[in-house]
Length: 446
Image 1: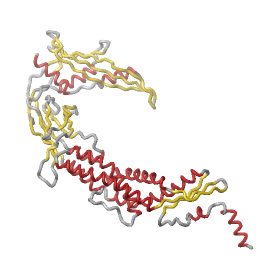
Image 2: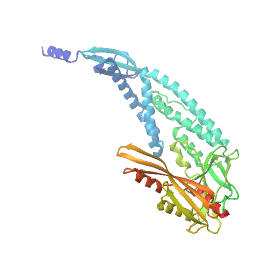
Image 3: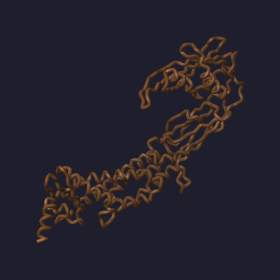
Image 4: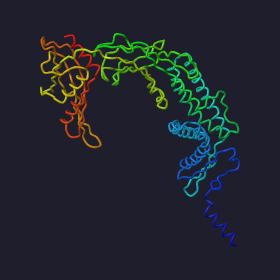
């Protein structure tokens, strides 16, 4: 009697819930051949989504150890960059499987929907294998072409191919992890292109890029005057296992002065050469430097550090010349003198070898105009922003002739008032050494 009563109670409690839901199994769907997921919800769609999520979680756990083994082959620096990429690629692959998940059984009981879903492992594996074949073909082709480009000295084209190949590497190895976790045989790679080795290969190429000075080094000229000879640079690739130098044509380069002012942007010619005409501007005493670096803005952040010290440096010196004296007058739009702006500009002129004097034969006259004023609403309240522009002219006092000019801008911000923002913009008027030096050099002709 007690057994009958117990059976009745169990029937009342669990009879409404399908047995296949409680046991997480159904005849004809063994876990050796299928990923199984059961779910419940207030709607059929919700129950189906929950069942799919269960299968997705199984897939993620299945590949977790395989992905981890790939990551252990990487350096700690690369792991920090690539871990997030693997997570996204894994999530993407799991999401793609939704269309292959079959709703095998569904039942509604007491306003609750129950779903039994299954994913055929063999069909899933076949789909992953087809995707791997396509990904490998694309990646292998890009890498092979990159290597051919390196042998021809087309390093920039090679790096572009390597960069494009990166888009296939993470999806490939993520799907390979799925494949190898489900298949008795791992996916065979005909060529030994593993992710760590590919990273090392790219680094090796970047480490082999060199910039040498070939012409115009150690020249001398008066401040603000052009050097007699253009400065030339040769960009080439040299493998760590070879003495052969392979010139790099069409390599984007940026050539700058010490303060970051750009002297030239361009690309190397067919012989890997690039040259620039330089104005002598003093930076360290009576000396200056011109620095040439590769300008690979498209290169992923992961690899840029390997080119940060790749540069060619040429030096020049300034000859001893009689310093030129200048008077300096800077006013605002209302005609009021701006002593702080004058003081800042005076320091720049003195560093370039000039002397500020009230009785000079040449006067530098300037006006600071307000270019724009605006109020910007920020999280901490209103911010006042002002942009001002300095227009500076070199006047020969004897003839009142304007013989040269120079402009500079400054931006000021203040949370207090527009007037304080104007004052801040005056203080920040930028003075480019090269342009100012060239203008001052013309004073020697008068």
